Image (tube, rainbow over all chains, first blue to last red; front, side, top):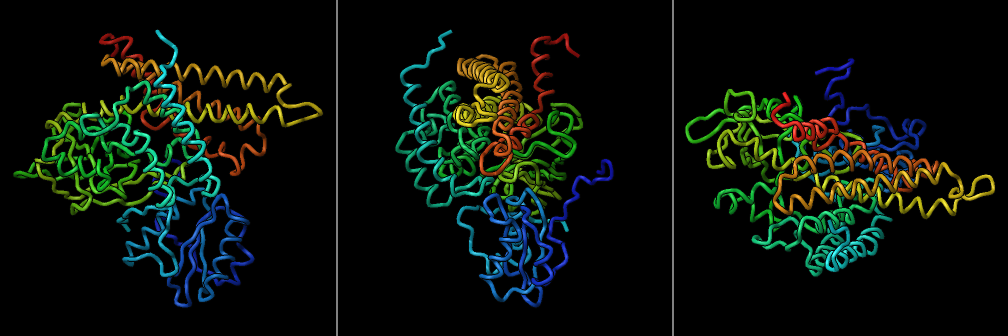
Length: 121
Length: 388
């Protein structure tokens, strides 16, 4: 179904943005709300995070803090969205669907109950 | 009509109000502004408190172990329980417990053993699968999901949209067309285990509401035993309709609770905030906003309580429930909008809850049947069979 050129499901289920090196990303990240993923040199996702309403400097601040805590990560990609919490949960569930576990550097979230997704694509 | 609360109602409401202010609000200070869940330890601790208060499992009928609370008091409690940031979609973060899907109280004993009792014990969760991409307000005609009998089983194909909690559920109620009759007499309600081959939660549907999201489901050659039909074959519409009517009262109550809290915050703020050398409260434009808020809140509250009172007496409350849903969701939106205006920049920042309430309140005019459908229901009740 498409209305005005917009499909009913226009959001890609998976985070499909291009991976950028941490250095490349530094100049591009802004203080927006959103979600992000960090990966190692093989571009395997190590961590999924979000910048929410309490994040200082939004994505820029959250990515910087995560990179500092996880020195092994070398790539980042992100998506600006105000639906950061539902998108964050969706990305964790998708990762679990794809790999049978959460990203290795993601501690089990204490205040979040994750469900099960089985995406079409 | 007695407009005074009984002593018992006063006590219960004061208890819930204290719980929200002393237990819920302090926790929200550290949570993300869009959060709809508590840390597991906090949640367990608060559930022990609501159990000690004798108020856990509010919507469970007394015959099944729930507290014996009349619908008017229950509605007043729902108004109180919504008076915090997550109050619209996660009142008190579920620490008063849930009753699961009310339709299961009418299930067969075998179905109750498998689905209802584990739900009441907190071991299973269910979802309500009615709406489809083709629409949710007119389920009798919009349902395209089909079930075809194959021996002792039914094979279901189709999909659902805007379904809450399906990704975390162990089972759900799925409404499917079982007869060629395109109207209400061809729909059946099936209890479906979410680990059934062919069942899939395809995606989260992202909306204005970041927490308590909806999902999209698909069913491909999903085989369900005939023993999992809830109620009678081709009589599923009545189950859906009954649920939609009952749900309108707590839905309205939540909006009223948030509106009351927003108004309370505005009343605290406007005498303090000065512009051009005088407090905001001295400005007639502000005073009128507060007056309009108060009228919106009182009208919604009384209409909603009347619906609850009629339901409690066992009378037909379809018209009153639709009026409550219509008036409270629209009034709630206006109240939150006016309060944002009074707070200025602070009103739209995530520091305060108005922006979240504003987004979530907008959904309330659409969810559980939009305002236009409520007007249609009311007109049908007024005009009866003369309406075509």
